Image (cartoon, rainbow over all chains, first blue to last red):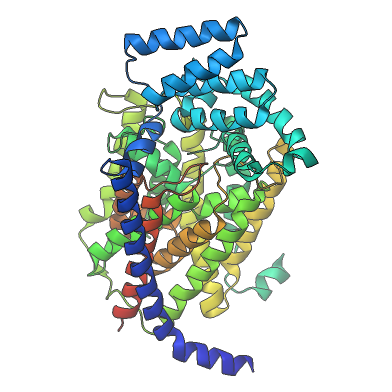
Length: 189
Length: 354
């Protein structure tokens, strides 16, 4: 039986190989096409080569314009004064103008954390770390690793509750949680 | 032990020593400062070297990893002493370059070469399970092409200078590491800034390079020999490497069983499978895994030297072209590159026959 199967496999191997070659090429072309469509929708040449490239390039933030510095300082002040709804609206405005500013996401996440909205907070921490991996780097002055570890620890406990599992966005929040866990674990990437 | 040697023809002390040392020293390099689960990783380290040479712009991945230079120089020294240094070349240098390139593309999809795959697995990383199957499947497909006559041409003696180029490059990089010329860049943050002291890394590299030259240790080769000729000798070394890496990880507290919070990993198991499938297939067509290519290049094998250059080029381009995966998962460019690599390797397997 096994011998017959092996012979049959041998006979079909080249045909299957040609099929696999064809499928690989078609799938690659399909991905190129969808990537191109996505790029056209966003309006940039290649969103996957430009947006993550910034993050991959070490999260070195370009010199912030003064307007942005002032806006971030304002958000920080609102956080200190515990005016959390105002922090949310201020940082959301910053993000609209500067979607790659990681600290806007950090302040937004902090505001949600203070309002006990752990799930929202995780999503924004994820965006912040994706934009600026230095946030979880031990050697970086921007480091928020210890703060993030506490949030993740709380979230892991919360993720086991029924209330969390019943949330419509629980999968997205879990993804953010796992991402942050992996980033905090370190590794070579 | 002698009974085991009789039972498994080809098994010798050098294979056992390589497996055991690799397993223990790989984990110890993490203790000394290398990134977590990355005691040794040929693809990550070549990416770091490419970055340090200014070939890519990811400022988090720039360091001249001495382990890589150690493998090449160690293999060269022992090959010279033993008279195994034989500069040879096949008539297909471009194929070797491109196949070497795709071994790193596949590894970048998974975030690690076959050696790191085993280190991650032995440290309890369950995201390494699917790519192990991918690697084995890739090796099996590659062997089936070999059975059907896959052939890259006759190997012929080459000029001695050609055989020593990669070793000279490795020596030069050691000099650069020690004297830090201005054109060599070192990361200040990220994995490129996480490393063991250079003398420990270089020492381990030299030691493993010497042992691997003697034993012909190869991750893909051990599977290939088993499938092709039923020769389990290298597979014993591989098993010992996993076993001792597991024990060392347990002893040092690096073992952490799980899937979701593993360092340098992602949860796209299907793409990890395909990435390692590509690495396995391309490695069989090259005649060895990325680590073996480094050792062979030290022995004067020009084909392996060309593969190493292809691997180095890939180490740069996986960052410049956003091919490398991250904790967030594979990138669209990475998926396209893996599919193109698979099509290429399958095409090579179908069309290059004796």
